[in-house]
Length: 533
Picture 1 (cartoon, rainbow, N blue to C red):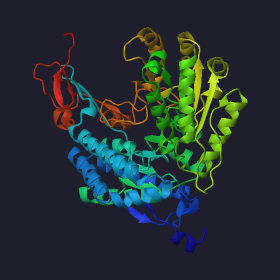
Picture 2 (picture 1 turned 180 degrees about the vertical axis):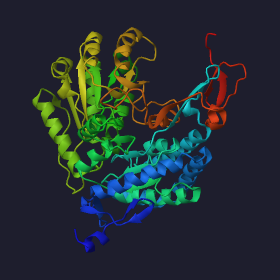
Picture 3 (picture 1 turned 135 degrees about the vertical axis):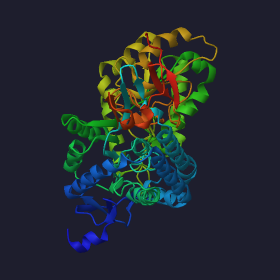
């Protein structure tokens, strides 16, 4: 690449400076609503940029260990305020790059959610309950969670704000724990990520964070990505995206003994019991169709699999859902490959015995899109080929499985991979509680969040939320990507202080109990543990 071309590319943020990338290529984002490439060009960084970012991050981590919790919290709050002040610029750019609606999606949903989770992260940083300090003053042994080291964050294409690599939950959690972050932008919205990085850098400078506490690289080769997550200088990685990319990164990181937290694929099964159909069939049809097609189905919690009993009531529900799919709006997809993926996966399901229930008409416009797609298959066919039939179709497509009995429903649930969510719709009268009691334990073991009587789309930013689940929905069933302070613990390491002199201890490990018993800090309050003397 010539120097002239390099100067035309957007600059990367490395070691505290916006500078020209050491680029080995370039790329441009698309406008999904027109199919056209956008004017701005961004660098594909060589390993030299990654290497420089890692070295700077290690230096920043050392400096951050001497910062007070208040400084970290102050940065996060300043950054949240800057996002609010620049919300219109962010909304306009994200709309251009992703085709997601300015309102309500970007302005009224994602901006408030992003700001809210950042402020929750600031609270977590300040009150430090996530550190779970434990004091055995009788033995003079103390332990707590502390920052783990430089963290890499790979953001997804479908949530440019709330899950963005330099604005989303992984970023907020890693920073709240006191770690520097190397953010890797998603090629679907590099301009949006750049604006966030600009505001984050200004807030970091105002708050007094080290120069390299926050760094941004737009893109890198697959080889460099694998090398980054397995480098000796990286402590942990947060990744949200496709299963193939996530599994490749997972393999590289784990072979090097490095932590990686993944959010991959999930079909989020919904079970509808016959009592619920008798109570409110039309409402269920409307909720399911809307949940599958809003944002063109590009949500990690989209219900991609619906289990409906055989029989007349179930037949009527399936027909109603199909009609809503056919008549509903067809949203824009985020990338030119998305429609190809839906078409290829749907074709494979049909070739293995599924029935297409919707009209597969082609759209006239040049935008990225695919017809709303709904298929049906018998539970017996699903059971005989479960790996194929629970393949995620990321977009406005879903599969209905027709079950002949509760026993058969439990059997097919036993074949599910791990999922983020699982839902059961049941009768409001409790008439099918016996069926629920048979199905719920089986489904609960396969999901991170168990839901009743509502679709899974929508993830509340709550301390009690679990946005995770058994593999392959996420890389570890014990952690959540949403919900402070629990999400912070992913980017922390347990440290023990044995016979360390009092003046050398972290503040939260100071003796609070003169009687020599074990004390623990929970939600900011010191409580004597219930320990046998």
